[in-house]
Amino acid sequence: MKDPLFTKLGTIAIVVAILFGSTSGTKAQPVPADDENIPFLVTFGKAAPTSHGDDDFVQIFFLMVPKTVKTPFYVRVFDPDVSGEHDEIYNDGDTKTKFSVYGGAKAYSNPKARESDPVAGYDSGTLLGSKTFGFDTKYDNKWYTFGPFNPTDGDSDNKQNAYIFKIIAEGISGNDGNLYRYYFSTYPDKNTRIEGANAFTFEYTFRMPDKAGSVCHLYPYIDQEVTSVKQSNFDWDDDGVMKIISYEKKGEWVSMSNENNWVESKHIIMEKERNASLDFQFVKGSNTPKENNNVCFYIRNQYGEFMPFYNIPIGGVPKYKYELDMIENLRAKERGVDGERIFKNGNDK
Image (cartoon, rainbow, N blue to C red; front, top):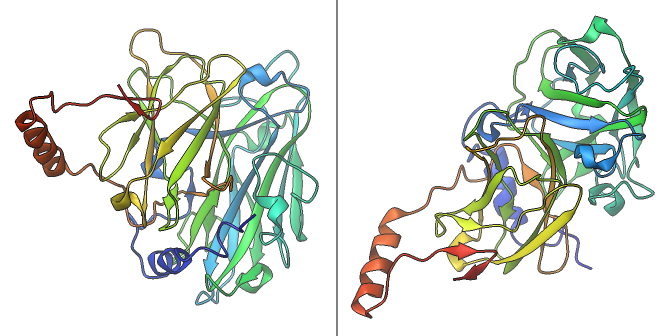
Protein backbone atom coordinates (compact mmCIF):
# COMPACT_ATOMS: atom_id res chain seq x y z
CA MET A 1 0.00 0.00 0.00
CA LYS A 2 1.24 3.45 -0.84
CA ASP A 3 2.17 5.77 2.00
CA PRO A 4 -0.31 8.68 1.86
CA LEU A 5 1.84 11.69 2.69
CA PHE A 6 5.28 10.50 1.67
CA THR A 7 4.82 9.15 -1.88
CA LYS A 8 2.26 11.55 -3.28
CA LEU A 9 3.36 14.17 -5.75
CA GLY A 10 0.94 16.52 -4.05
CA THR A 11 3.27 16.65 -1.04
CA ILE A 12 5.08 19.55 -2.66
CA ALA A 13 1.86 21.51 -2.86
CA ILE A 14 1.14 20.85 0.80
CA VAL A 15 4.60 21.97 1.87
CA VAL A 16 4.40 25.18 -0.12
CA ALA A 17 0.93 25.95 1.21
CA ILE A 18 1.91 25.36 4.82
CA LEU A 19 5.26 27.07 4.86
CA PHE A 20 4.36 30.07 2.74
CA GLY A 21 0.98 30.84 4.18
CA SER A 22 -1.53 29.70 1.54
CA THR A 23 -4.16 29.05 4.17
CA SER A 24 -7.45 30.65 5.13
CA GLY A 25 -6.13 32.62 8.08
CA THR A 26 -3.42 33.20 10.62
CA LYS A 27 -4.81 31.31 13.59
CA ALA A 28 -3.13 28.02 12.79
CA GLN A 29 -2.90 26.53 16.25
CA PRO A 30 -6.36 26.31 17.87
CA VAL A 31 -7.76 22.78 17.68
CA PRO A 32 -10.55 22.80 16.69
CA ALA A 33 -9.88 25.85 14.51
CA ASP A 34 -12.25 28.80 14.25
CA ASP A 35 -13.27 27.92 10.68
CA GLU A 36 -14.34 24.43 11.73
CA ASN A 37 -17.03 25.75 14.13
CA ILE A 38 -16.56 22.70 16.35
CA PRO A 39 -16.97 23.50 20.05
CA PHE A 40 -14.97 20.58 21.50
CA LEU A 41 -13.04 17.42 20.82
CA VAL A 42 -14.46 14.42 22.70
CA THR A 43 -12.84 11.37 24.28
CA PHE A 44 -14.80 9.00 26.52
CA GLY A 45 -13.50 6.67 29.19
CA LYS A 46 -12.98 3.13 27.89
CA ALA A 47 -15.90 1.78 29.95
CA ALA A 48 -18.40 3.98 28.08
CA PRO A 49 -20.81 2.48 25.55
CA THR A 50 -19.88 3.40 21.98
CA SER A 51 -23.45 4.68 21.55
CA HIS A 52 -22.25 7.87 23.28
CA GLY A 53 -20.39 8.67 20.05
CA ASP A 54 -16.78 7.57 20.61
CA ASP A 55 -15.85 4.36 18.78
CA ASP A 56 -12.41 3.67 20.32
CA PHE A 57 -11.76 6.09 23.26
CA VAL A 58 -8.50 7.39 21.75
CA GLN A 59 -7.96 10.58 19.73
CA ILE A 60 -4.69 11.41 17.98
CA PHE A 61 -3.63 14.78 16.61
CA PHE A 62 -0.41 15.84 14.93
CA LEU A 63 1.35 19.20 14.97
CA MET A 64 3.56 20.13 12.03
CA VAL A 65 6.23 22.74 12.88
CA PRO A 66 8.34 24.11 9.98
CA LYS A 67 12.08 23.57 10.32
CA THR A 68 12.49 27.32 9.98
CA VAL A 69 11.04 27.69 13.51
CA LYS A 70 13.84 27.75 16.09
CA THR A 71 12.07 28.83 19.30
CA PRO A 72 10.42 26.48 21.83
CA PHE A 73 6.65 26.03 21.94
CA TYR A 74 3.99 24.63 24.28
CA VAL A 75 1.04 22.25 24.00
CA ARG A 76 -1.91 23.71 25.91
CA VAL A 77 -5.06 21.73 26.78
CA PHE A 78 -8.29 23.52 27.68
CA ASP A 79 -10.49 21.83 30.31
CA PRO A 80 -8.48 18.58 30.49
CA ASP A 81 -10.28 17.31 33.61
CA VAL A 82 -13.49 15.26 33.56
CA SER A 83 -15.89 17.33 35.66
CA GLY A 84 -17.88 20.51 35.77
CA GLU A 85 -18.99 22.88 33.07
CA HIS A 86 -18.33 21.23 29.71
CA ASP A 87 -17.92 17.48 30.18
CA GLU A 88 -20.53 14.74 29.72
CA ILE A 89 -20.80 13.18 33.16
CA TYR A 90 -22.60 9.95 34.09
CA ASN A 91 -23.12 8.68 37.63
CA ASP A 92 -20.05 9.37 39.82
CA GLY A 93 -17.72 11.01 37.32
CA ASP A 94 -15.05 8.32 37.68
CA THR A 95 -13.31 8.83 34.34
CA LYS A 96 -9.60 9.43 33.82
CA THR A 97 -8.11 10.81 30.61
CA LYS A 98 -4.40 10.63 29.80
CA PHE A 99 -2.88 13.29 27.54
CA SER A 100 0.54 12.47 26.07
CA VAL A 101 2.93 14.32 23.77
CA TYR A 102 5.31 12.33 21.55
CA GLY A 103 8.22 13.32 19.34
CA GLY A 104 11.33 11.67 18.02
CA ALA A 105 11.69 9.05 15.30
CA LYS A 106 8.51 7.19 14.34
CA ALA A 107 6.15 9.49 16.24
CA TYR A 108 4.52 10.28 12.90
CA SER A 109 6.38 8.22 10.31
CA ASN A 110 5.16 4.92 11.80
CA PRO A 111 2.10 4.06 9.63
CA LYS A 112 0.33 2.60 12.68
CA ALA A 113 0.11 6.10 14.13
CA ARG A 114 -1.93 7.27 11.13
CA GLU A 115 -4.89 4.91 11.16
CA SER A 116 -8.44 5.39 12.41
CA ASP A 117 -8.12 2.84 15.24
CA PRO A 118 -5.45 2.67 17.97
CA VAL A 119 -3.68 -0.43 16.67
CA ALA A 120 -0.36 -1.55 18.16
CA GLY A 121 2.18 1.17 17.40
CA TYR A 122 -0.17 4.14 17.61
CA ASP A 123 1.87 5.48 20.53
CA SER A 124 5.23 5.17 18.74
CA GLY A 125 8.00 7.69 19.22
CA THR A 126 9.60 9.27 22.27
CA LEU A 127 7.30 10.28 25.12
CA LEU A 128 7.98 13.96 25.87
CA GLY A 129 5.27 14.62 28.43
CA SER A 130 2.18 12.99 29.91
CA LYS A 131 -0.45 13.71 32.56
CA THR A 132 -3.65 11.96 33.63
CA PHE A 133 -6.70 14.00 34.63
CA GLY A 134 -9.80 12.87 36.50
CA PHE A 135 -12.51 14.60 38.50
CA ASP A 136 -10.43 17.63 39.44
CA THR A 137 -12.03 21.09 39.46
CA LYS A 138 -8.56 22.69 39.53
CA TYR A 139 -8.47 22.32 35.75
CA ASP A 140 -12.18 22.74 35.03
CA ASN A 141 -12.67 25.38 32.33
CA LYS A 142 -8.93 26.21 32.57
CA TRP A 143 -5.71 25.52 30.66
CA TYR A 144 -2.97 23.00 31.39
CA THR A 145 0.37 23.46 29.61
CA PHE A 146 2.89 20.84 28.45
CA GLY A 147 6.40 21.93 27.51
CA PRO A 148 8.47 23.72 26.51
CA PHE A 149 9.42 21.60 23.51
CA ASN A 150 12.12 22.37 21.00
CA PRO A 151 11.04 21.95 17.35
CA THR A 152 13.92 19.50 16.85
CA ASP A 153 12.29 17.21 19.45
CA GLY A 154 9.76 16.20 16.78
CA ASP A 155 9.83 13.49 14.13
CA SER A 156 11.92 14.94 11.31
CA ASP A 157 10.16 14.92 7.93
CA ASN A 158 12.52 16.16 5.23
CA LYS A 159 9.97 15.96 2.43
CA GLN A 160 7.71 18.42 4.23
CA ASN A 161 10.64 20.32 5.76
CA ALA A 162 8.98 20.04 9.16
CA TYR A 163 9.15 18.44 12.58
CA ILE A 164 5.99 16.57 13.53
CA PHE A 165 4.67 15.96 17.04
CA LYS A 166 1.87 13.64 18.14
CA ILE A 167 -0.68 14.38 20.87
CA ILE A 168 -2.80 11.49 22.18
CA ALA A 169 -5.87 11.76 24.40
CA GLU A 170 -6.90 8.38 25.82
CA GLY A 171 -9.83 7.50 28.08
CA ILE A 172 -8.12 4.99 30.38
CA SER A 173 -11.05 4.40 32.78
CA GLY A 174 -14.66 5.33 33.47
CA ASN A 175 -17.65 6.03 31.23
CA ASP A 176 -17.79 9.84 31.10
CA GLY A 177 -17.03 12.09 28.15
CA ASN A 178 -14.11 14.50 28.31
CA LEU A 179 -14.69 17.60 26.17
CA TYR A 180 -11.51 19.61 25.56
CA ARG A 181 -9.56 21.75 23.11
CA TYR A 182 -5.89 22.30 22.21
CA TYR A 183 -3.78 25.32 21.44
CA PHE A 184 -0.17 25.10 20.26
CA SER A 185 1.49 28.26 21.51
CA THR A 186 4.82 30.05 21.77
CA TYR A 187 4.01 30.98 25.38
CA PRO A 188 3.09 28.80 28.38
CA ASP A 189 0.41 31.11 29.78
CA LYS A 190 -1.28 32.57 26.71
CA ASN A 191 -2.26 31.48 23.22
CA THR A 192 -0.01 32.81 20.47
CA ARG A 193 0.45 31.03 17.17
CA ILE A 194 3.55 29.24 15.90
CA GLU A 195 4.46 30.82 12.58
CA GLY A 196 3.66 28.50 9.67
CA ALA A 197 2.49 25.54 11.77
CA ASN A 198 -0.61 23.45 11.17
CA ALA A 199 -2.41 20.63 12.99
CA PHE A 200 -4.12 17.59 11.49
CA THR A 201 -5.69 14.25 12.32
CA PHE A 202 -6.81 11.12 10.48
CA GLU A 203 -9.98 10.53 12.52
CA TYR A 204 -12.00 13.28 14.12
CA THR A 205 -14.23 12.66 17.16
CA PHE A 206 -16.04 15.86 18.04
CA ARG A 207 -19.10 17.45 19.65
CA MET A 208 -21.70 19.06 17.43
CA PRO A 209 -23.14 22.37 18.61
CA ASP A 210 -26.61 22.06 20.17
CA LYS A 211 -28.06 25.01 18.25
CA ALA A 212 -30.37 24.13 15.35
CA GLY A 213 -28.91 24.96 11.94
CA SER A 214 -25.28 25.00 13.14
CA VAL A 215 -22.70 23.93 10.55
CA CYS A 216 -19.37 22.23 11.35
CA HIS A 217 -16.59 21.85 8.78
CA LEU A 218 -13.76 19.36 8.15
CA TYR A 219 -11.14 20.01 5.46
CA PRO A 220 -9.35 17.04 3.85
CA TYR A 221 -6.68 17.94 1.30
CA ILE A 222 -7.11 16.30 -2.14
CA ASP A 223 -3.82 15.84 -3.97
CA GLN A 224 -3.49 15.37 -7.71
CA GLU A 225 -3.59 11.55 -7.60
CA VAL A 226 -6.91 11.19 -5.75
CA THR A 227 -9.75 10.04 -8.03
CA SER A 228 -12.33 9.13 -5.38
CA VAL A 229 -12.84 9.23 -1.63
CA LYS A 230 -14.86 7.07 0.73
CA GLN A 231 -16.20 8.83 3.80
CA SER A 232 -17.13 6.96 6.99
CA ASN A 233 -19.17 8.47 9.82
CA PHE A 234 -20.26 6.99 13.15
CA ASP A 235 -23.22 7.72 15.44
CA TRP A 236 -24.62 10.77 13.62
CA ASP A 237 -27.97 10.10 15.31
CA ASP A 238 -30.04 11.42 12.39
CA ASP A 239 -29.08 14.93 13.48
CA GLY A 240 -29.47 16.74 10.16
CA VAL A 241 -27.48 16.29 6.95
CA MET A 242 -23.89 16.00 5.73
CA LYS A 243 -22.70 17.37 2.41
CA ILE A 244 -19.55 18.11 0.42
CA ILE A 245 -18.72 21.60 -0.82
CA SER A 246 -15.92 22.21 -3.30
CA TYR A 247 -15.06 24.46 -6.20
CA GLU A 248 -17.26 22.21 -8.35
CA LYS A 249 -19.83 20.87 -5.86
CA LYS A 250 -22.36 23.09 -4.15
CA GLY A 251 -23.70 20.31 -1.97
CA GLU A 252 -23.16 16.62 -2.68
CA TRP A 253 -25.08 14.64 -0.08
CA VAL A 254 -23.30 12.11 2.11
CA SER A 255 -24.65 8.83 3.51
CA MET A 256 -25.33 9.26 7.22
CA SER A 257 -25.19 6.97 10.24
CA ASN A 258 -27.75 6.79 12.99
CA GLU A 259 -27.33 5.41 16.52
CA ASN A 260 -24.11 3.50 17.21
CA ASN A 261 -23.32 2.42 13.65
CA TRP A 262 -20.86 3.20 10.87
CA VAL A 263 -22.07 4.26 7.42
CA GLU A 264 -19.91 5.01 4.38
CA SER A 265 -20.33 6.35 0.86
CA LYS A 266 -18.04 6.79 -2.13
CA HIS A 267 -17.61 10.13 -3.89
CA ILE A 268 -15.90 10.79 -7.22
CA ILE A 269 -13.26 13.51 -7.26
CA MET A 270 -13.41 15.82 -10.25
CA GLU A 271 -10.31 17.18 -11.93
CA LYS A 272 -10.68 20.74 -10.63
CA GLU A 273 -11.13 19.47 -7.07
CA ARG A 274 -7.57 18.16 -6.94
CA ASN A 275 -4.73 20.11 -5.34
CA ALA A 276 -7.29 21.74 -3.06
CA SER A 277 -9.31 21.03 0.08
CA LEU A 278 -12.85 19.73 0.30
CA ASP A 279 -15.33 21.15 2.80
CA PHE A 280 -17.24 18.35 4.53
CA GLN A 281 -20.16 20.09 6.20
CA PHE A 282 -22.18 18.71 9.12
CA VAL A 283 -25.47 20.63 9.20
CA LYS A 284 -27.50 20.44 12.41
CA GLY A 285 -31.19 19.69 11.90
CA SER A 286 -33.70 22.47 12.52
CA ASN A 287 -36.68 20.32 13.53
CA THR A 288 -35.45 18.04 16.31
CA PRO A 289 -31.76 18.91 16.93
CA LYS A 290 -29.99 16.43 19.20
CA GLU A 291 -28.28 17.58 22.37
CA ASN A 292 -24.78 16.35 23.22
CA ASN A 293 -24.32 14.72 19.83
CA ASN A 294 -20.79 13.30 19.42
CA VAL A 295 -19.63 12.13 15.99
CA CYS A 296 -16.65 10.16 14.56
CA PHE A 297 -15.50 10.75 10.99
CA TYR A 298 -12.70 9.71 8.63
CA ILE A 299 -12.10 9.41 4.89
CA ARG A 300 -9.91 7.24 2.65
CA ASN A 301 -8.77 7.61 -0.93
CA GLN A 302 -9.17 5.05 -3.73
CA TYR A 303 -6.21 3.06 -2.37
CA GLY A 304 -7.81 2.74 1.06
CA GLU A 305 -5.32 5.17 2.63
CA PHE A 306 -6.54 7.38 5.46
CA MET A 307 -6.46 11.05 4.56
CA PRO A 308 -5.58 13.91 6.94
CA PHE A 309 -7.90 16.71 7.99
CA TYR A 310 -5.98 19.97 8.35
CA ASN A 311 -7.37 22.38 10.91
CA ILE A 312 -6.51 25.22 8.59
CA PRO A 313 -7.45 24.05 5.07
CA ILE A 314 -4.60 23.91 2.57
CA GLY A 315 -5.30 26.50 -0.11
CA GLY A 316 -8.08 28.10 1.92
CA VAL A 317 -11.74 27.25 2.48
CA PRO A 318 -13.17 26.01 -0.85
CA LYS A 319 -16.04 28.06 -2.25
CA TYR A 320 -18.39 26.75 -4.91
CA LYS A 321 -17.86 28.53 -8.22
CA TYR A 322 -21.34 29.83 -8.93
CA GLU A 323 -20.47 30.89 -12.46
CA LEU A 324 -19.68 27.26 -13.38
CA ASP A 325 -23.12 26.21 -12.16
CA MET A 326 -24.76 28.92 -14.27
CA ILE A 327 -22.96 27.69 -17.37
CA GLU A 328 -23.89 24.06 -16.68
CA ASN A 329 -27.53 25.00 -16.14
CA LEU A 330 -27.66 26.93 -19.41
CA ARG A 331 -26.09 24.03 -21.30
CA ALA A 332 -28.50 21.57 -19.70
CA LYS A 333 -31.52 23.70 -20.60
CA GLU A 334 -30.28 23.83 -24.18
CA ARG A 335 -30.37 20.02 -24.13
CA GLY A 336 -33.95 20.16 -22.87
CA VAL A 337 -33.32 18.92 -19.33
CA ASP A 338 -33.48 20.49 -15.89
CA GLY A 339 -30.13 22.08 -15.15
CA GLU A 340 -30.47 21.72 -11.37
CA ARG A 341 -29.03 18.38 -10.21
CA ILE A 342 -29.37 16.89 -6.76
CA PHE A 343 -26.62 14.59 -5.50
CA LYS A 344 -27.47 11.79 -3.11
CA ASN A 345 -24.87 9.42 -1.65
CA GLY A 346 -22.39 10.16 -4.41
CA ASN A 347 -24.81 9.40 -7.28
CA ASP A 348 -26.84 11.67 -9.54
CA LYS A 349 -30.57 11.27 -8.93
